[in-house]
Image 1 (cartoon, rainbow over the protein chains, first blue to last red):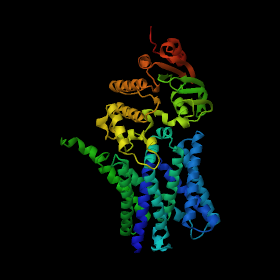
Image 2 (tube, chains in turn purple, orange):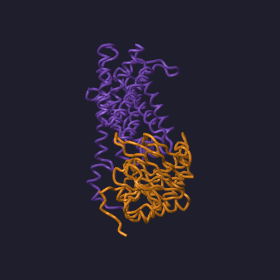
Image 3 (tube, one colour):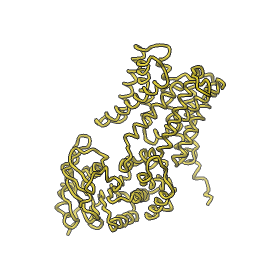
Image 4 (cartoon, each protein chain N blue to C red):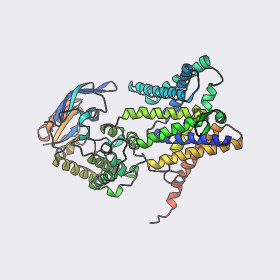
Length: 292
Length: 242
């Protein structure tokens, strides 16, 4: 596949997996947890690197899951000690992120791992960092990792669709029906962590928040059905990733920045134009004549 | 055998003690209202019983066993304000959620579940609204959807947290008719209730709660001026005369 082809595929995989996970982040009112986890996974990656001395996908995923879960557990714990939820999120992730930054600066500072890369991502390098797969041949490691994460996310959503729905909508009922609400919460946090870390190489820690939140927030404006919202959000993610790439080529600027900007455009269009919640429909509706 | 037996239950909320040595027993086929001032621990009591909120000490038994074993026999209607009504789902879907325990892990709801949910909506007079997004229902209609969801659970003991709060008169009558049907069918119902004027008309038992049990028994014996005063302290303006 061509260089551009790999970049578009990698970016689309980011858009799709982030779009799917983002739906439940929005519905569970946990948008800020995405921000928190996207930062604190840096610590997990750094520690995985310190222990194994290599930047391999598998180690990074494990480090990210541990860091993501640690964030979720600490936030929950502080909150149970009467510290406001948003305050505990702010305290926990900045501290974990800071430890990651300090470790990078002192322990592992080298060409492979630096703060700027972790924050902004560098999708232009993705096609060169390949691994050999049987039958398929050379594949960029980031794309391979993202494909695996996407399969895991899809399986988790399809297999436990009704459990995700009920624990998001009414956790009290879910618990009284015997569904392990807290376990589902931590599994979800793990999914957010692996999605984030797999997207790291491509878009970085800050832009991944845009990919997680914005397409889902836009999809929410278009539909009243959870299944439709999932499909739309994934589609918006892919659309933003691809159009973001071409915006970047056109303006000769940062690819990850343009992708995040494209998600913002999709949201703006949805906000103005969606038939149910859009600004335009509110203005226009009084003048339409009911067909029935 | 008591449907529900509570002994010396203590619980706190954000370090304030809200339940203090609460003990009572509920007999099968009773329709009990839980009444008390704001902050008396009514909702917390339900949450502790359903293990949604931790208890400090005390014992609770359902049908002579633990909640964990009897889960499927217990139904719960949370307060209407406790869920996000903008959630992308429709009335029928919400009712089907009551059946998720029956559907089982890794399975999708089938046609029989759909039909059962539809029947419950019909019973609550909500069949025409099955496909309506839930934020586009009135407060009373939302409460009927919640009640339909509880009906499909087919439990033996129901807990309801303020089902009559902020609903229209027609919904109030529909809900009370349903509660009486449940009672006739031998089910037990406990309702957190805020309207003292309707307690005598609607419920055969009363649990007066203010952090601890002030009085508990049949409405006739327990719902007296003195007891209500004791439960509400000096804060009560309304007292039923005669």
